[in-house]
Image (tube, rainbow, N blue to C red; front, top):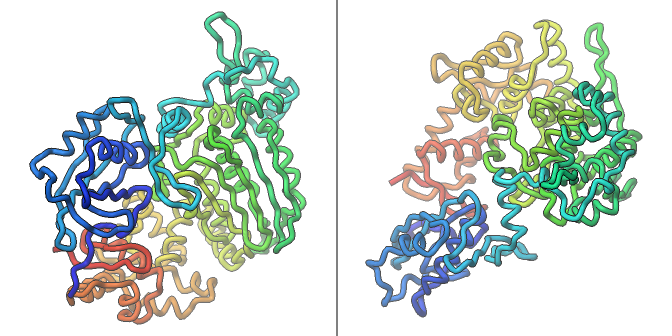
Length: 556
């Protein structure tokens, strides 16, 4: 059998290939390549591989005894600590450098810096790092609060007193901090960080101050990246298409007004109660939109966009990826972090944003409790955060089950229980340990919620002891009109799925997801995906390749 390739087949934002075939790569170029990766996310640098992925190996004259990792550390500022490993790939020798992401920015000793980026065609490149890149990176890593810095060239005359009146009205309407209403204008601006005092005692607007209370002309001049696009689509027809560059509170008011004619509700009778089911919960929109405004990268020349396709759902995107410490996998558990702390704090204190910093929780809870799928952040990248909110018809049978549970138990399901039910719908069958691992919550807490759902006949248990697994109950599957799926889950436990996948892998051939689906009758595509990911995270399988060419093998 042909040996599986161990290294990536193509370059990416975290993978760089450098040729050493025709002549040894110069140390200066090697140092800059490492700097380029470190100034983004870090990644893997392979010496001895061509740009097209062909492995050509090291040049015969290269000094194999030289410590290239030490060379890179000695020629970077601050010193870049990386590891270097010699590999054999396809019978040729190459060097693999593991470049970690760093705090701040790294330069060569002669003051040069590159940063990994994508060109207009989506191809990874190393480009010169600008002063804006350095500021943006410091802001991303929460070393500098851009929103709290004085806006260059702005004066207090650029602040609009009418917007201060609007801000005070927001405090009253959304029950913000009542003490803010007792302050004078200057005291209010200072308390919210909208102005700062200069060395001479004069007041200067901060970026947050301009964004909340600035006239439009100085906003355009001082913060050219600020813009908000709002579109409503019905099929191919554009019902609304507006781009706004005014102060944030005015923008929020205008978009809310334009959104209102499209907001609809239907009522569901559950026992003696009538439950309103909106096509888009207003709290979900507000939290998603305010999050985009509060946490976007204002140094980027790109707008926040709100696009509502009335037949599918709403998409809200903002420039700037997740700040350090926040990822797709820990969105619901990471401590609240902001790219713009002064701006985010002001929005919380006036009542427009979730004060506890758990706005994402409210978005998930709001959609799940009205019988819709969870919000998706899957399209987010290093440069943009994208959230998709489903407005497809709600599953009213599910809502009836949730409401019936609430009436019988005397309390709502709550976010954690809704997430447990969502995961079981996505992955069919999981143990309490697997649920707690994926939810990143305390196992005892998760087990308690699962047992409550079991008592409420929303979840069914199978097996005993540590191997006990859970599925959605028969009545919940009936709400999804998936009675056959319930019968399939009753016979295929997670342990059985893992065991049979490992048996397939033990045959010695590289395993594909297609092979798993063919071998395990009744297994769904997403179940196979999750099972393979689970076995890889446990170190019981090793993945190779990417996309449709991805294969899996047992560890050596």
